[in-house]
Image (cartoon, rainbow over all chains, first blue to last red; front, side):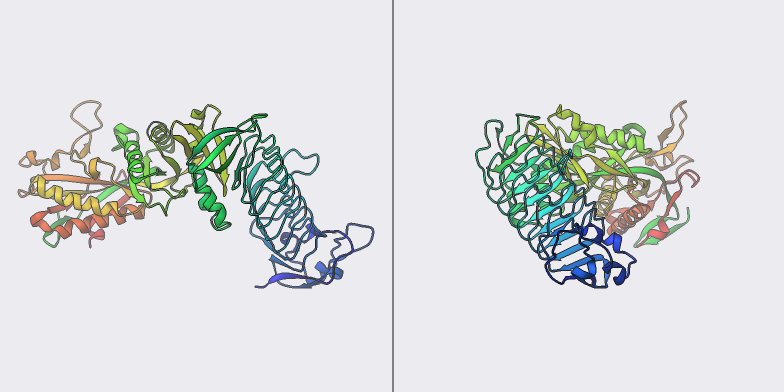
Length: 269
Length: 302
């Protein structure tokens, strides 16, 4: 069965709240009912029908033809077994609090992608904004599970307060990658800058390019890690380069010893 | 005893009587095959019979580097016990003493069962708070720092109560050499069956037992009916041409694994013929009232 299609008519005039368009909320609805859903975020009304041309199909698989950086909260609270594909850019909070499923974005994503996500798989072809997987202001923990793969670069503080799950960045990472990370795994294949792993409690940061990590990261020598080989196997379908990085001998910098100190930065030996 | 004949080998019209058991398993990997096997053999040593060892365990199969979760050579071991509690106790104890200690090893789950046993969760404290947990695809692993690097161990492994223990074949031949040749061929064939192990030394037991004893308080004693040095006495079931009896005991993850293993064993033993191998094949049972699983030899013949 063909996926349920949302073809963008024109660039929306306001930011959209697309959390209402997750597959589980669309099951059993007719095209007419879907077109009547209000997705605006201002006083001006914005219904699905005005912005998208909807073509009926399997609501378990959504397809957005055309994207916009005004597409906020796309795939929020997504459940296992569903998938969303976006041919274009998306806005802030992509996959916010997602519990499972799969989101593929053939474009760029805004800030706070995968924020609060606890399961599922997000794949972003382009770049990603700041605070990838980070908590919103006031929240204690960030992403708590699942996997996010960014083919391009990311903004600052990706993986902030990461609690669980894997963040894989094939491009360059902005300042303060993995700041305040609680646990989980961040893999960055491009350049990193700023205070990498600042106040990292027990997360693993695996970086293809080493920089000066500051005095609170302590060199623990180069080793073969069985867990890295395990991750290498698990990630080979997402990124061959990441799998290759993980199968190498890695130098372990333990830290951030300014806090708990059970985390680590691993770089090729 | 009524008998069938296949390729000159006499087959008793008898059956093996087997019992339900709790079973679990591990995949043990290491930087090379030698150390994966060392860990597996150490861990499954002294695990021939639940009577004295608390469990029955053995190597199920070797795994190539492609087949293991971490891409290193590995071994799959299976462990069976009479209760899930016994299985857990034995598994954790053996893991802690034999695999944690063995250089280079890592441990993963081998089977998914109805229940879970805490494995990594039980030995992680050896790490004295330096241990780190890693989650991957819904499974959790502990990294315990040890003197050769890190011991990677999965937090929980599966346990199933659908296992079967006590499938068996009694291999009877003219002398020790020919009987051993036939029995070894049987064990070799069973080794290739996934999900089934032969827990005794080299897969073979020579001290088959019967229920009860003339001594007070002894639950089991020698199976005198199959002892060749007593063959002239009234209770013996041996024919005059039998000079040696060896038994293969089989534990399996499923009913089907045990019957497949017995079928493979029978085939290999019969193929050897009566001149070089076994003259007769039987099976041990307790009259059929104790165990719910019955494997009739006539149904398993090639």
